[in-house]
Image (tube, rainbow, N blue to C red; front, side, top):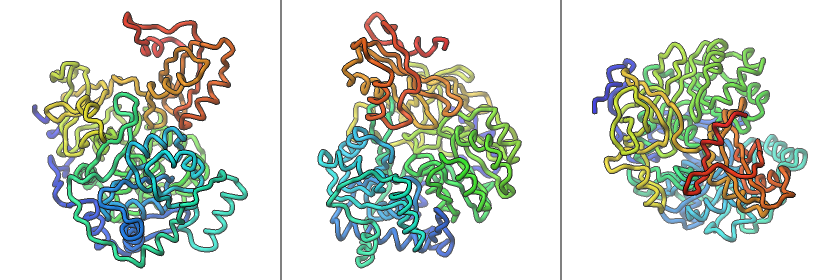
Amino acid sequence: MEKIWLKHYPAGVPAEIDVNEFRSIGDLFDKSVKQFGPRVAYINMGKSITYAELEQQSANFGAYCQSVLKLKKGARIALMMPNLLQYPICLYGALRAGYTVVNCNPLYTERELEHQLKDSGAEAIVIVENFASVLEKVIARTPVKHVLMTQLGDMLDFPKRMIVNLVVKRVKKMVPAWNLPQAIELRDALIEGGRHPLQAVEVGHEDIAFLQYTGGTTGVSKGAMLTHRNIIANLQQAHAWLKPAQRDPEMIITALPLYHIFALTANCLTFFKIGATNILITNPRDIPGFIKEIGKYPFTTITGVNTLFNAMVNNPDFAKIDLSHLHLTLGGGMAVQRAVAERWKEITDTTLLEAYGLTETSPAATINPIDLVEYNGSIGMPISSTEVVIRDDDGKDLPLGEPGELCIRGPQVMKGYWNRPEETAKVIMDDGFLRTGDVAIMEPNGYVKIVDRKKDMILVSGFNVYPNEIEDVLAMHPGVLESAAVGVPDTKTGEAVKIYVVKKDPNLTEASLLEHCRANLTGYKVPRQIAFRNELPKTNVGKILRRELRDEKA
């Protein structure tokens, strides 16, 4: 297969990257700390932490897990928090000590959290107390033995720490009552960890850095095994692509949650390598507050999803902040809309570059050139050391311009799904190419365009929602006979969930269904539209035809 895209690579971008530059993420961490010690690594709620301070704090966390909790190399540690300084402290501490990080969405319901903790075999969890009541209800049914509790303001200086925690708990009442007698305060654990040395652990390319959960192809939440080699390869690939335009120092706005693979690799790790400062935004849903916060900083780079950029350009205050330092905007997680990209360019004078990736590819696979002048409706070209082919249902390569399944091969492709070899075999072909489930075409210049999704996956604000999961939850309701979930266009979130339901109980109401869904599904998975039907379209073998429902005119 000829790598036709190489002829069109931007100047300075190599065809291949060196994945052997670092032995592990911990090795990369050590080298960055040595090089950039006094620089500010992360800022959150006005509080900054330098590379050197992060080295000490993360060592304290890793040492606590080793010496006090007695966790062995390879143990899984769950992190369940929004963007806070606690996240990089615990993340790097766990990885340096040889553990595997399991990222948990703080908005998980009891059912979702229980599944992930049990499936991953997590022995410890670091959690913000706002979500402790959910953990309390399921912890007895999980392998979790150790709970490290933190509050939103815990890393801030006194008295701001006390004020923030008091307002969150007593004024805004954002912390439901919880009872976890075994919980240890993270702040206390870091102090105790400081009394012990971080023991050196041999961590190599094939050790698993993350179990990053995704619906994959079926909707059963599975842990993608992302090795240290996978992650190092992807941050090397991302850096190689960005390097020709890199400024020193960079300051990047991190609004997407670090538990999401996009922000984790692109913001947290890639920009850590180059000595950048990450501005961590805890609540990007508060757009006025978000814009006010980023207006305090001379930021140079921002990543996000289309819905975030859309909300920003539609807020009049955004155009009023100082955007003179901004030179790089990267959009991923969901399709970037032309209208949003054009408005962004108009306000910021920078091109909104669309990229493409998957949890299973750590995540980046294709990116548009950094020097792209105008939005082009493409997801860009395969990045360094990455091969892309378009294949038919039989796995045969298709000619240029013909739509087929987008398949990816490269050092960033996951090792497989945790404890699910059959599911792994469905997506990784014998020659190492990963089936993405997305229908795409490749143009003669090597650019790739997404045509449609082969899977029935619904993409809500950049998060994958799988119909099977929603239908399984609906099936738990005694008033539901049959159901189907599909994605419908939504101006705010790109897509939203619509369900079609055949009643078992004639008295079943929309309100009852929504209450049931909210109790069992994270907010973005909850249906926004409900339609009752007497029957659902099916194939001759009885399979519900979601596509037929999706294609119906509203």
